Structure formats: C-alpha cells, structure tokens
Length: 359
Image 1 (cartoon, one colour):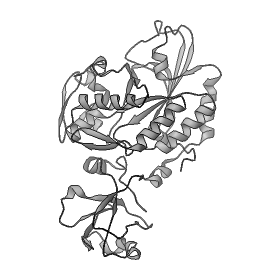
Image 2 (cartoon, rainbow, N blue to C red):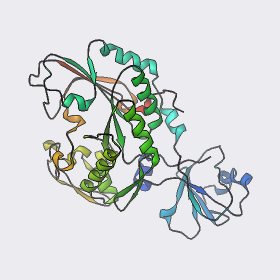
Image 3 (cartoon, rainbow, N blue to C red):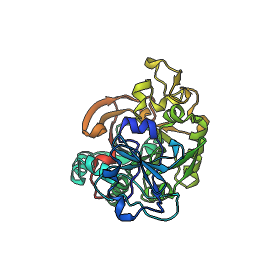
Image 4 (cartoon, rainbow, N blue to C red):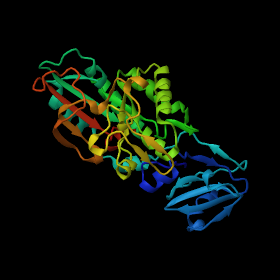
C-alpha cells in the first residue's frame, strides 16, 4: 500500500518536501511480512532494513538507500495498513499512481444534493457560461449570468466526478488545474516533465465541454524552487494548449506562503499588483526572489485572470465552509459598461470538500 506526501497536508511538509513523489521501495533482504512491523521497529529512530534506511519524521516514514543524501528520501504515511514494500533489486522504482485518498475523504463535507440545491437557486433565472465565455460577451446589458469555477488543487478525481455531473445536466464551469499538484509532473531545473495523469484529466474535462484554466502558483515556485516564473508560465500554457485545451487564463492559487510573505500569485502580472501591498515590488523567499508586476497578460498570452471579474453575489467554500458575499470587486469591467445593469453570480468550489463518490 503506497502513499505519497500530499503537499497541502501541513505547512511544514509543504515547505520542506514540496514536489517529492512516492516511490516503490525495493528491498532485497526484507521479507514482505516484516514490512508491516516497521512502525514498531523504527520507533522514531533510524533503522536498517536490507540496505534501506528508514526513519520517522513528524509521523511520516522516510525511506532512502543507506548512504544517499536526504534529498533522495521518500515519505510514506504512517498508518495501520501495510506499506507494501516489495523485495527485488536494491533500488527505488517510481510509482505513478499515488494520492492520499484517505486525507481527501476526511475533508468531505458536502454531497451532490447540496450542490444541486445551490445551483437550483440560479439556473432557472441566470445564463450559465464559463468565465472565458463571459469575458468575450459583447455587452452584458440587463442579463443575469452564472459563473462556476472549481479550484481543483490536488483532488482531480472528485473534480472529474463533478464535471461529469455538470455535463449530464448541461452545466459548464471553469476548472483550474494546479501545476504544483501531484498529478502535474516532475519539476527539474525549472521545467516540468508532465505526467499522463494530467493529460488524461485535461482531455476528459475538455471533452465534457468545460473550460480549463491554469491555477497559478508561479510566484511561490519562484520563491521555493528559484524558477523563472515567466518562462515556466509560458511553457505550461504552451503545453496545455498543445493538448487542444484552449487555455487563455490563469487563476491565483492561495499558497500557504502567501500570507507569510505578503503577496498573491496573481501579482506576478502588472495588471494585478495590489497598490495597498506596495505595488510592483520584490519578494525574497527561502530559495529565490521574484519581481511582482514584472510581466503583462499580453506577454504570456493570457486574456484574463479569474479575479478580474466582478460579481454581485459570490459564493465560495474556501476553508470548507460555504459562505456568500455581495459586491465582490473585480479589476476590469469587461462587458459591464453599466455597474447597475444585470446580475453576475459567481460560485467557487474546491472539490476536496465535496463527496461525489470519486473514490
């Protein structure tokens, strides 16, 4: 039974071990039945098992070949289920399909019936369209618009279940895919090697008629991994569009470092820097420095950022609690020449809070 580190599971794990994926541990001398007893044998101290060094750190198993550097560690969740370590070849073999499903299950608070009740309030009276479709409308006038956005983060299985549920009912939404999520790819020297998980996920969303947006965590990545945010952003947009997904937008990701260093990821763009936070400025992080407000939408082929859009009613489940706000301001008018005309309702969900039977 294999697990990977869910980088959103705790601040410390997120900062120290971001991007580490799970591996199958191959032990040439350890019997399979002995593996289940690692929890009692390690006891927080280093232990040797057939050339593999196993430690426990903050409730996580850390396994690496003896004599290697700590950066080669693999973190496996502590629990009562067998870790599934197999025998053969003294190597770490990449395990492709890994995710902390139990972690996601524990977060589920809402069911499809709740979502249906929420949408029913507006579907009969509002035109449903994607955020991208709205930005291209010639004039809002007195029309009522329903915009649905899903910040997928790490839970793409639930996102797919929601996307299918919506498609079956003729509903469209904008799905924001996070490039620092487990399904995206491996990051090496500022460039991603993409997983097939990402391609399959995006293709299915696109086939269901939904819009795909890039969930922007590039400022954070510049601070933690010293990447060039502009170059990495351009490469990821180019890759997504090479799949035929027609991605023209980004949506800021609220990374845990944002509060610590007083920024949001949308501030990478000069159109989105916040004057009240100091406008265009440099943020110095643990491993890199990023200049905010240093690029424009046009430079990277972005038409809009999700928070450019004003909403008269804004419903969000951020933090796991549904709440409603009025008059959420945006940065651009788009088709709304008369602020008093029409009515725009925005709904934001994070699939991790919803139980659509994805597991």
